[in-house]
Structures are given as structure tokens and as C-alpha cells.
Length: 297
Image (cartoon, rainbow, N blue to C red):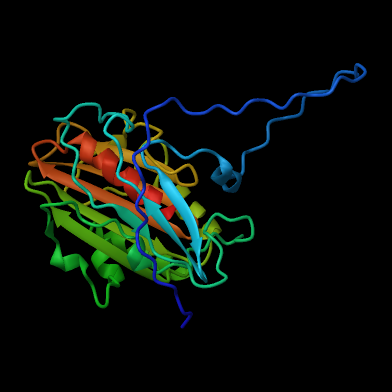
């Protein structure tokens, strides 16, 4: 087992509110006119290079290399920084300050250029979003030593055929393990977060493409009737290295409404589900997706 260095969350002083700093274009030296360059077809941007771009201001990520490992502290989000969270009574949950676990000595970050497989070398269980203040934990998702059985994850899906097909697909694709956490908040919202780790990012990209298309999820969850892509979900509400698809159950629905999101983050496929009697609120769902993607990014 690779030795890990324990790190403490870093205290981050409050940051003044200010517009994002714009990079100034470099001054080019005077030169002789050059013949016009023929335009080239657009090239798909590599998600890995986006790590150098300023992170979304909804959460400030602090990087500090300490000893043999690397720890990451993520401060709490300001209410005015997250789209849809502009007022004091918006229903935002009180999450604890988040800290990424240290990496084993010599291991790269999941989106480093040298990490071609997109591997998360940190303990997957430590990358799970913690429950917010006042929530009651869902003991059914604790699993054994923090690892959830595949059948317990597949129980989220309504059709037996879907469960059977996904089980076979996970076997073929080399599913390593599943970490999960669930809770219920005082307003009755039931949240489930699943992190499925595979061998490479390529496998996860394929699964994400097949399970989370733009028009709606390929497979309906238990208790849902019809879910469609949530066009009101702010595109900024996720880490830029992480791809997402967010869905909301349309009317008419049953006693509960369900919101769900799929995240493709390197070798990890995250599935986030929130359901609530009556209407599932959008604000805590966006907040939950945003913070979990920050932990994986």
C-alpha cells in the first residue's frame, strides 16, 4: 500500500469581490507584414489544458504541495458566486469546508498531462461529497468498508432489463469499485451520490456518452416517468475538467420529483440523484453537483 501524507485543510482568507482578472495579450514586436494565413478547421479543446484556466468563482481551490503528497483545500462558496444562489433565502445547504485527500507520493493529479488514463489516485471514498449540516445519513449506502455492492447501485434503475444490461456492461468495462453516500435533509430531500471507478477515462467517456445523452437519460430511474435535459441548469455549476449532463423529471410525475446528474471525471463516473415529495428544489441540486465536481476535478 502506498504511504500517504496526512494534510489539514488550509485556511483561506476571504477574497474581495471583484470581476475576474482578464489576461492581457502579449505585446508583439513590430515585424514585416506577412502573407495571410489560411484558416484551419477548429480543433477540439483538450479538457486537460483547461486546468491552467481560472477556476469557476463558485469555489476557490487552493493548491499546496506539502511533503510527499499534495492536499487541496476548497473554501465555501459565496452566495453571489453560484448561478441561482443570489439571495439569503434560496435554500442553499450548509456544507462543511471541503478538502481533497492527499495524493500518494509521486502520483499525478487526475487531469495532469502525464496522467493519460485520467486516474484518480486518491482514495475514492475520500472524494465523496460529505453530507450537509442537519442531514440524516442513509445507512443503506455505507456498503462494506465504504464500498457499495454493484447490485445496490443498480437498484436505482427501474427496469430489470436495464439492471441486467448495466451489470454486464460494468463487468465488460472493468468496474473496479463503487463508493456511495446518501442523506436526507430536514425538508425531505433524499440525496444519493455514487462514484464508479473504472480502469481509464476512455471507458468512462464511452459510458457517459451512452447513458447521458443530451435529450434525456438512456435509462429511467426507479420511481421516475420521464426525465429530460435540465436546460435551466447553469453550465458554470461544475469543474471545467468534468463533463456533465443534468436532468429533471417532467410533469406529470408521481408523489416525488427526481433530479439526476451524470459526471464524467477521468476514470470516475459520478451519478447524483435527488428526489423530494412534491417538487425537487433546483438550488441544492446545483450546489451538490458543483461541489462534487470540484472534488473530482
